[in-house]
Length: 329
Image 1 (cartoon, helix red, strand yellow):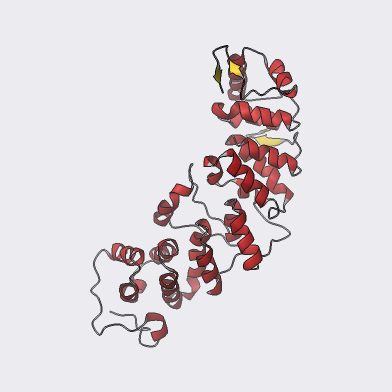
Image 2: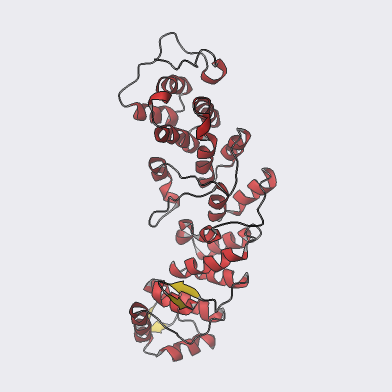
C-alpha cells in the first residue's frame, strides 16, 4: 500500500497515476535500475511503496547510489523522499559521503543546500555495494572505512576539491582535529605517478594545518613506498629521527623501513630517509627487519655502512646496478 503521507506531501512525491506500479519481489534491483536509468516517475512509485518496508541500511544504499549514479534532480528527489520519511537518518549526510568520495562538486553543493554538513565529529561509511562501484579509485585492503566528511575530503589529496569546499562552500578548518594520521592513509596515493603525488601534496599543504598529520603520514609513506611523501613530511617539520612504536619496541624511521617496507620499494625509501637526515646507524630490529638488511646488502655486495655512506655521498641506491648484472632496483 502507498505510504499514508503521500496525499499530504505532493511536493515530495509528485503526481502519480491512480494505479501505482506493481512492486517486484526484487525491490532492491528495481530501485537500483530506476536510479541508474534516472527514471523519476518509477522511483517515486517504488520509494512510496517500499520505504517503510525496507531497512535503514537498504534505504541508505539507494540514497548513496543516487549520489553516485543519478542526475542532480533525481538525487534531490531521492534525498527529499527518504528524509521526509526518516528525518532522523540524516540521509543527506550519507549521500554527501559518496559525493565527496567521487569528488562530484555539483552534488556536494546540492547536498549542502539540502542541509548536509561537512564536519569532523561524525563518521560516515559508504554502503559496501555502492563502494564496489567506486573501487577503481582505490586499492588495498579494507579501504572503505568510517570517516568524517572533512577527513574523507582531506584524505583524497585533491587540491581542487579542498579549494571548492573552503572557498565556495565556506568550510572552515578546525584548530584541532582528531585522527589526523588518517589524512594520508588514502589508497589513491599508491597508484599515482611521482609527478601526480608531488602535485597533490604541494597543493594540499595549505589545507593540512595540523603538524601531527605529517608525523603520522611519514609512517604510512614508508610502509607503501611513497618516497615523495617522505620528503614532503620532512619539509613540513617532521623530525627525521622521530621515534615510532613497533609492536612493543621503540624504533626509528630507518628501522621502520626495514620492518614494514616492501623489498621492491626499499632502495628508494632508504635513499629518501638518509637524504632527509635520518641517522644511518641501525638500532634494534625484529628478525624480519634484520633479514631485509641482509637482503639489501646482498643485492649490492656491500655492507650497510658502505651503502649508507654511498647515499650520503650523493649516490642513489634506487638506480644503482646490483651484483654486477646491470639489474636495477
